[in-house]
Length: 282
Image (cartoon, rainbow, N blue to C red; front, side, top):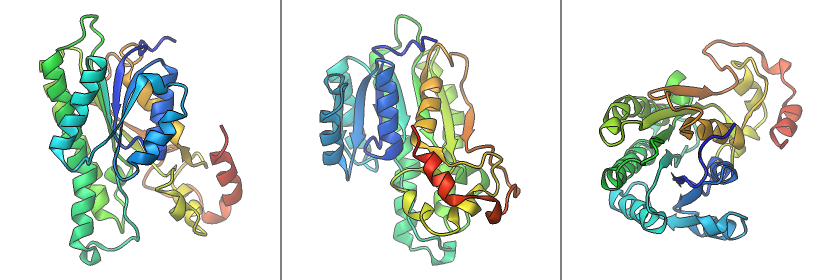
C-alpha cells in the first residue's frame, strides 16, 4: 500500500532515543523529509544522522522540550528548511528510576517527569499547530497529523511511578481536545495517541535486565514477547498516513501485546532469555 507519505515533512521529538531513531528510519523508508529533535544527546543524534542514507533530506536540531520558545524555534527551522511541517510526533520522554511510592518521590523528580512527558508534549503540539496556522493546510487535502507518545502506565497506572503515569494519562485529554482544535486549521487534520507497553529501548533496558522483571512484565500479556522500537514506530507511521488513516482521529492505540489488568502468566511460564533474543530480531 502507498501510504502517501513521500515528501511529507515529519517533526520528531526525542529522535536520539530508541523509538525516536526507529521513527526516523521508518518515516525515511516512506520517502519523508525529517526534522529530528534531540536534547541531552543532540550531538549523538547529529553524528548518527550523518551516517544515514537519508541525511540529505533530514535536519537535526537541539532543543529542550521544557522550553516552549526553543520548540517554536526548532519548528520554525524545519519550516524554513522544507517549507512546511506536515506531521509531528511528540515522542520525547523520561522515566526516572527507581520505583518509589509517591510520598517518597523527590519533588524535583515529579516536576521533571511532568515537565518533559506532559508539558513537553503540549509545547510540541503548540509549536506544530502554530506552524500549521501560518502555512495553512496542504492543497492536496492530505491532512496534517499529530501523534502523542503515551504509555500503558497512563492507561493502567504504574505503582512506584505515579508521576509518570499521571503525565502519560494527561496526554489522552490533550489528544481528545486537540482533535477538535486542529480541524479549524486544517479540515482534514488528525490527532491520535499511541500507548506502548514495555519496549526494548535504552531507557527500559536496565530495568529489563534485572532478574524476574521480564516475567512480571509479561504476566498480563497474552503475547509473551517484548515490544521493539520499530513495532511502535511502524504503528505511528500508519497513523500519520493520510491514506491508511485518513478517517482516524481521537484514537488511543495500545501497543502492548494485548496487556490488560489481570494476570495471564506466572514468571515460571516465561523463558526470559528466549524473550530477550526475540526482542533483538529484525
